[in-house]
Length: 178
View (cartoon, rainbow, N blue to C red):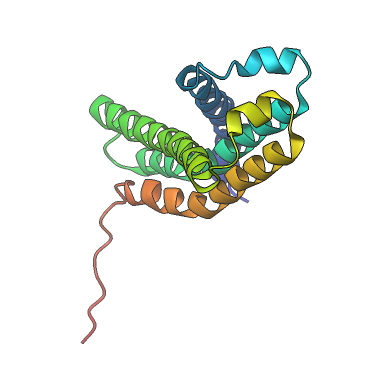
């Protein structure tokens, strides 16, 4: 067991706590801003179970997607920590790439959730999602919520691949094949 590995593990744990709160609740608040016609928090205060389940699925879906931002940020921190060029410009570059990875995963989470809701509305023209959830139709809220969670599970690896691809790993050389 290496002290450096334990330190990086602890840093990753603390970073994942901060990222989870900032990103998941950031996506949630941004969702509320983008959907002003559906006064979600008023429905929550009125104990609308359907709205609670629906909003909970948005939080869970966002968490599933944005968890993919933790690895790239930790990789960037580790690359910076072990590099020979630990300068202020290198640190700022690491911070910029980390912020970009985090923002990208948050944006993709929100985009996929909104796209999922848009698609649900267009594929089920006989169901007015907003009206059904406002009137506490738990069946529609559960169907929509599980759709959001399912889509989030399916796209999370793609988001992870995209954010990992943005990590500037150091050049290690090539292996001759002949």
